[in-house]
Length: 404
Image (cartoon, rainbow, N blue to C red):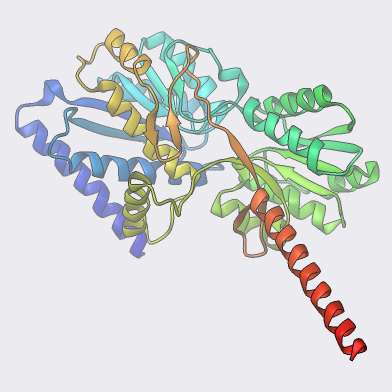
């Protein structure tokens, strides 16, 4: 109840600021920015985090007396439905918004680009990652990198660190899942040395996964890669745990929402995933400012998706600054973004609207936290070295005692 009150207060504050600007006679200079994310339905965990991050960015910007781009946010819930997402985007453009944030999932983003091109407006996705979106429209940008980069990291990690000979893939058959399935297969085949046993279909809708889990167990892969969204991946992990699968389980950052990890419970312990670096404990001033504001508003630390929501609005305002709200000028603004200091890392768009951000491998701990795998290996080596030193000291002491 307390969190809802905080969120309501923040939303009311944003509305009041926008209203005051309108009353001041600045309506023609106000940039309307649409926000179409799933706040209900299967993917609401992403939409909720994204909206919170966007609201924190909006509050910070509106409180800046030097703000040069007065703006108003227009929120519409996509309800986790592709057609509704496209209709909602059309609706926010009807309000006069030249630009919108949306496409929380790859499927939503791909459908929404059809509206973008028909209307000649701009869409910026904070979290869609399918390779199919690269260069899909000159009016589409994203602050989240293509799955190609995550797949490359995961494949090289598997080849270098996991002593396995066989690999299986369990993937949702949507834009996101099939895209991941394709790129991880491609990257592993490039590296060689690991046989991809089979690919299994992960249903998008809730269903009994025990049969698929048993079939995967029968192929006896050394590791399995699960490609899908948080709740589906969580259910797949639990199903594998229930049938006694003892191979390595790998997935991507889409699983690592608080809701997804909580749903998987203890079965998530030891799962490996790739994720873009967002250090919630960073000492950098702009990251601390965001994290502190988020905790003050919602009583918890922000996740990766909240951070991307925050960065997306921040980079939009930077692109609009000093420019008339004309399509060509906004395009120039995005092309002019160079090494923008986001809380998720430096942001700069290439000629196809993509960004480059590199991920690391994390392991889920017993308490549901994420441990950097490199740090985990370092700690293990330090522990082995410590035990070796202790053993050597004991042997030396025994030797001395024997000599006496």
